[in-house]
Length: 371
Ligand SMILES: [Zn+2]
Image (cartoon, rainbow, N blue to C red; front, side, top):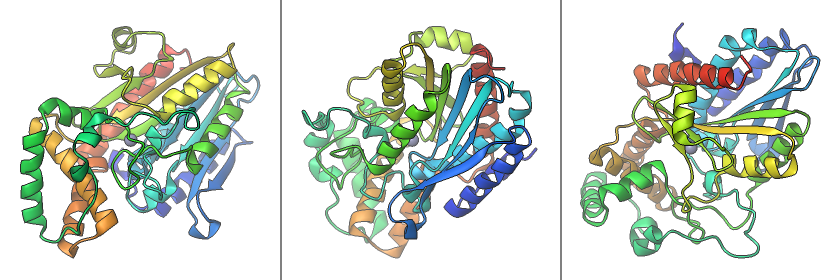
């Protein structure tokens, strides 16, 4: 099998190959349906697509695989969905296990090769239930370096700009700061033209996904939710991230799943995580249900100082270019850097995504008694 064949690098192509999966799923679940909703005006044709397949006899376990919350990361997400259908479907107990597969939670971002939504919102910092009462805390790293984080002028001479930016980043940030910005970036809730902006209220895709997730979870005794991402953690390795709602420690999970990279997201600085939010809401609403949630993060670059610097430089440049524009050369260079960070072209990376997702899903689903 050529794993890289699961990848499409265009939103509409990726969506169309996802939609075709519903036919294959119907050979196992004859009543499976393909559903979708629009984000933004229907004329823009940005849809979140969902394949729903209910257990054939008894609604015991629902497996939810969601992708594309960070737009551009959805191409790897869809590759995992394709692999899941081809590799796992034959082995599931269809009489008791249902499926919800989600393509393009942030379709606008996926279409435009951005991570954020049309309003520049990082959806994975947007899932908060207290917007109305008190404004969520903006991390001091943003306040302390505002001129750096906010776009000011067009980027014209990209080489000079990059040299200056790199020397500034080296000067103001420690390795720990850059590692945090790469792997566990805190959100900020003040500057809509800057990075990791969590918004002022639940954004349209977040609202629709929450309602849908809760209504779907209601029908099953147990839910296993996996949200697919790229860019964090070590190069060509998959990191499994669990939330506060998970009672087992990172060490227990590491040994139970025989997986090297396991993290518990317990950082008080990282607000608005969608997996955490959906798990908390579902656990609160359905106290009798077992809600297992994990975020799969496929690493794209190394963890060295230089690589972490590349990550922040690229994130800043992509945002500067979006708001202020620049030369054609700058746009092309920055776009290539951004793709390298979230959807690398290398075959070895694509293969690592598919093979590691397969191993980790096998381990997790076996551990949860589904396989
Ligand atoms: Zn992501």
